[in-house]
Length: 216
Image 1 (cartoon, rainbow, N blue to C red):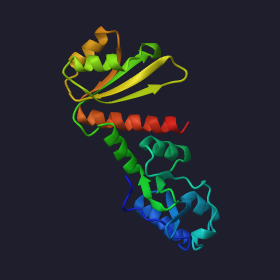
Image 2 (image 1 turned 45 degrees about the vertical axis):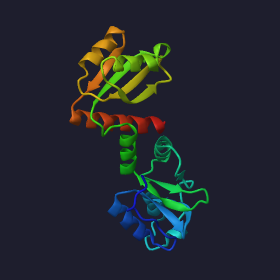
Image 3 (image 1 turned 60 degrees about the vertical axis):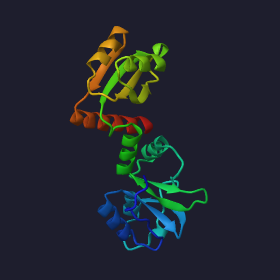
Image 4 (image 1 turned 90 degrees about the vertical axis):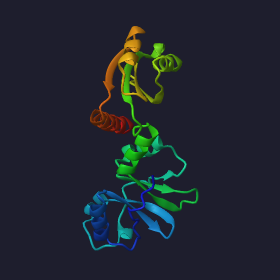
């Protein structure tokens, strides 16, 4: 997921250079690196606040507390950090604090797509169930009894509700028999999607909801 395009800044680079690169790569943050050592992340707001574009960025105060992730961390941890600090890039370091690169917004989207089997053909079903009635084995059994299988499953819970929202990606676009079976077993099917364009919109909406949730 690490970008091979977005560059790192040196402390001797000017604020104007940083802004130029931010505009080119359409980001609002860039890492500052001294040789291999990660020093921090500068934002366009940091630069505008100082309002001295020809000053080296080493003279700028940084508003962010050196946010970063390690290469072995899960994609959800990357998303949580990005949401918490409203980052457009997430720096990646190793155990010696050596800079390895950044993960951009687009790479995060690609990571979620890969993790969620988005690119594989199939359809989407969203269930609403009471927390006490949730059974992963029962849900899997219903899907598999209709000659299908679950490619990915995500569960969303609201602390103010006793219900769970369960999102299933299955390996078929013919969802009729699966939906009927869920309804026969008293599951509430709130959404189903089979068209590719609808799936794209669905995933974008779910990603935005996830980022909003992580940012709370």
